[in-house]
Image (cartoon, rainbow, N blue to C red; front, top):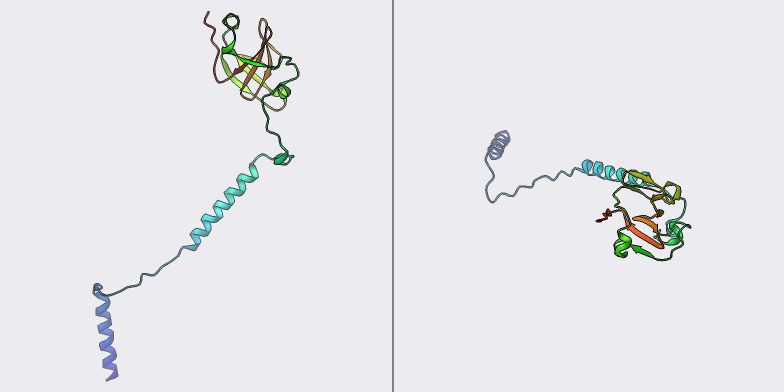
Length: 166
């Protein structure tokens, strides 16, 4: 008789498994956590971070002791005798008319003064060069140049060209 009951129970169980669940039936959905995927993602992020740190430029001096360069007379060059810079557009009109038009196509600033250069009107100039008659390039700063003309030290940004409208 127990064989018969076991067979009935198995048959009933098989028919229950084939029927869709009822509204009052609670089913537990198995939670499979994909820890391998998260581990691989974390490993890639760590390796990317380490490679960025590895390829960053290294300095021999500590970061706290490194001074921030500023455009001052001391670090532009010893050749500048004038103490105040004046913007090109702030010059008197008769002085502006004597300065030729300038178009900048490249500007290279380096902490080593021998590596600094600027291209004006398709001509390469270094600090101390004469750009035009009476106009010399005294210094190349991080964001522009300093010209010497007559008794003026003229500060000029390389982000804008100078056009002389005679």
